[in-house]
Image 1: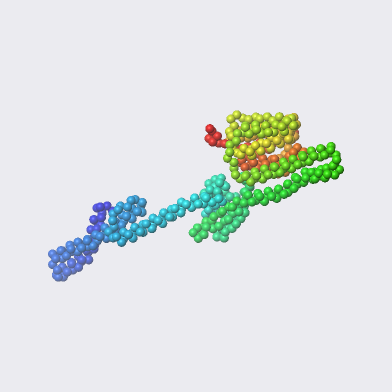
Image 2: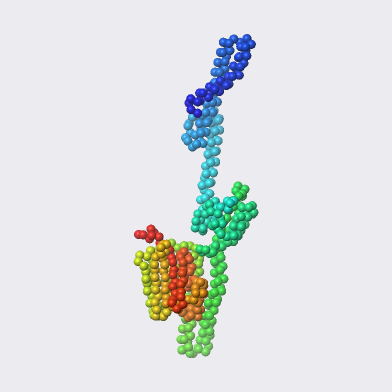
Length: 452
């Protein structure tokens, strides 16, 4: 209210308050009990008294309105005192309580997303229409996208989880289910779906607890017992047989001792390679879900691996040639594990390729920020029906030939898991009579990171 409107408003209130007095005075004049002059003076006096009575409440009301407008709009307090000290104190206390409550609610609202993000397990808050209203950092990393606003069915294609969520949103009690995601890496979760309670009756929360490590441990344990018992049975039987022979009939036969000890040494080394590969595979599987972040020079690594296998190549008169593109970006990865990948692939090409032939190692950049390293041999090739199973543990196309040449049946399984950990791909191509090509496609360090 401006400075002109305030006096006008106050005058209107004063005149309205004096109306009853004017009516009484008019009746007295009409009855002859009071002269007109005295009635006029009494009427003016009534207006003055009404104005004095109305002035203080009006002033108090205007000052209060100014403070309310200033405090609720966030503007500075005008500092204009309110006439009543009691009312002033009550009003200030009310405003202080209101401000404290507003600050507390704002702080709780701002802290809630941050607290959820600190949880190590993925958490999804889902509304009645099955849309994700909030997803914590772990859930976003699991899905690879920002889940907020997405329908749950479009990001988690699991019928059991969707059915549990629909039941809870419809009013059922909380449920626990086990689900699995087969790609890009197999993972297992125990999921608890719970309603959010009376405050949000049409919403639910899903908490994912990762069981992948436990599942892998159990699977590795059972596979280890089955596969290792099978693989160690033959060499152990050979060793025990030759030991028994050396202790008995060949006790005094020096020539037989030399021959048998050489065989025993070969079998013992085979078991040592098997144990070493099993330990390597176990370690790689445990680390498969942690993506490596190092930088590895492609040319330097391949040259080093070729040098390590030079003696093995010389035994079969195989020439290992490197064909590397110019200016290859570094690979993103773990140097030791990538060395194991190329050592296995080049070693297999030397072992199963044509004796006296050539093994070609080719590295080329790919348009999507990847590098392809291919190992080509001139061997007999692999029948098409065997190619999908080559990366299974202990799977061999020709078991006798593999054992004869020192293979453990774990090399390609190790390669597969290392490439999977590096978020790459292994491509196997082969044609019988024309050799095989094993290609590893791995991510390169982004250009900005690799620039000096």
